[in-house]
Each structure stands twice: as C-alpha cells, then as structure tokens.
Length: 186
Image (cartoon, rainbow, N blue to C red; front, side, top):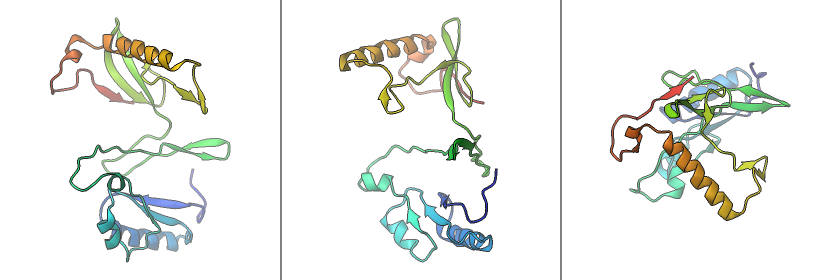
C-alpha cells in the first residue's frame, strides 16, 4: 500500500554518507511534492557528527548511545526495526528491501521448536510455530496476572528452570562456540 504524495510525515536515514544522502533524499521528496516530509538521521550520532551535518537538509537527529555513555566506554548495540504501523483501525506491514538489510513486515513471534522435550530451534516469524519464548508481564497497561512481587519472582524462577531443562546437554556449557540450537527466521 503506498501513501499519497505529501502524506509521509518523515523518512529516516541511518547508514552511509548521511549528509549527501540527505541532500539526495530532500531533492527526491521535493520533486515528488512531499515538501513537508521531514528528514531524520540516526546512526550512533554524537556532537561531532551532528555538527558536520549542519549544512545538510536534516530536520532532526536521533541520538541514543552517545547520550547515555561517556567516550571510550563500551556499549551494547541494539537495533529496533519497525514492522508495522497503524493506519486508522488497521495495521500496515512495513518491509525493508535495502540490499543486505531486507526484512519481512508484520509483528514477529519468537517461539521454540521442541521435540521429545528437547529444544531443536528458536523460531522467529510472523506466526506461532512452537512454544512461545516471551511471557506477558504487562498486557494493555495492566498486569497480565495479579501476583505479589514474591509470586512474580517465584514464577520467573519456575519459567527459567523449565526453559533451561529444554536445552540439549551441550546447551549447559559455559564456553564460546557455535550456537547449541539454531535460530530460524521464517
């Protein structure tokens, strides 16, 4: 489903030469009549990168990692991928087609394939294919279960023991190496 020209609120740039890409994207948007569409740049930005982008047609900057850490301190890198957005009452899937970054749209479900009580694979896809890996704690802004704090701790312990017991024996080693069970994207 394509959006009508000029109705796209913003585009996000997060890799490559952000300055020159922003110039090309602004020209394309203007040519298409989307003169009010904003350009947002992200990608581990810091004050030096933002200063270097001042001449580019950038409307806003997504700063995260450098905001919460000092220089020369290690960070854990995480990536959030938009998979759908609301269009009135409906949800519209969002897919990425960039080379080496293609994604499948739609809400993802993480499950575990189990055979004879032993985990065979972790499955990530748009449909339920095995035992769910995630446990709801909050649902629609309310506690999924009415438990006391100590009951939540006990429930977490029991869940942890159950999922650990599903791993093959090699999954209990504390050494680096190949994954014990594969992660399969469907």
